[in-house]
Length: 533
Image 1 (cartoon, helix red, strand yellow):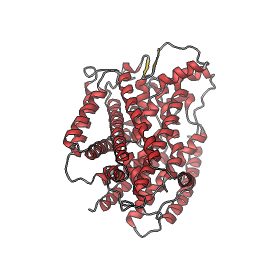
Image 2 (cartoon, helix red, strand yellow):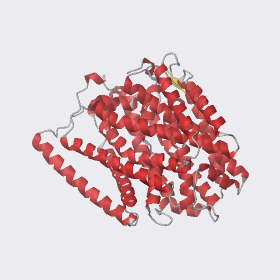
Image 3 (cartoon, helix red, strand yellow):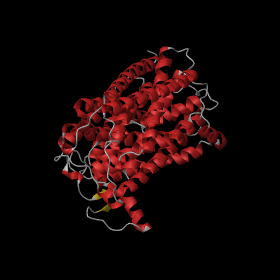
Image 4 (cartoon, helix red, strand yellow):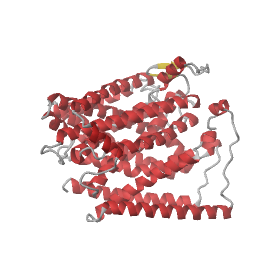
């Protein structure tokens, strides 16, 4: 481990577990107390996912497309669980952050390939959090030149307490505030029959277009963002969770995934209630405009939405910035733990403070199209997610890293399918941006079929070549008892056998990189078009 503070007692918001506590946990009371101590990383990463960008994106979906995109949220539950469960295992078994694992196993070149994307995307995401803070404050008449600097200072103070437990308790206070989404949903008089239909039956109001595809990618990007992988793994390491408690952290993650989808649905349904049958329908500008639109129905509803936006922005800013600081510590070999105070980990806290300060300053630039920027950043997260997921998949199939905890074949199949769907969405966005008159639905189907056929052919060719060259041998892991499995930890990184990439995998990663670069360029083009540029 890079930081000795990552070893010791588990100090959660709702309980502690001593390092040497190996007592029996077969009784329900003992299990509940253990879960109370462990719960945190999964809930925080998921609720933090419903950040300012999330609120804005879900609200736009409701205002411009009724509730016809609710089905995307239901489909994202397994995506959330699969992706985050893999980082749960990586964090607990390795005791090492995601960024450091990528650097050490694949080399600094490939490490910067992934971590470089994270730094850029996270910084832009932090900007959107301050956009949310600014819009929420403007609703109640507070100047952004007052609230944004004040929020920046508060974020730094919340983090730099020198206590992981105090930080986690602060996060749970904001999570508690976010529960006002439930009365907000009830006040929006939901049409339960229509909502149930739109959850279960895929559809898009007005049909599939480049704009609707962009929004769907934004929903994916804001719900399953790359920063989540880096945050939860490092937060598990920082909380000192070991393989013995993986099952509890899995429960934490599943609970978080349900909470994030319920919250997202509440925002989408509420925005649709405000816009339905009014001049505001189909004319989304930004989240602040949604609050004012809701106020035309009920001043209380508008105020609650503004509180939801402000609270989401604070949680998101805290989690995303911390994710970046964790990665910064991993990459540069620095102390990076919330158990340490400012004097013990100055570079760690300084990186956090600088990001917060610069992001806050950018938001204060007058005249920026805040709504378009927010949607574009969420879509960018969706486009970059396949790259992050590929490295996650490679690590979770590395027996040197996870030993008996490597992925099962069925899990690899689901993860590969998820990556394929994301690539189909980004490819459809590219095509619809280049050729606005294209039949988006037909292209998406044909493109998906083409990718599936190409994937099968490439897999078959690589498998045949691997057998001929004698490189298809898989490291066998000896059978272990449950107690042995629970005690298994990754050996020191410098003692692991180096990763050997096949030519096919190397070419595939480079092709993915080129594909994503083109996707990002066309996303910028689309964002400029929507912004009136």
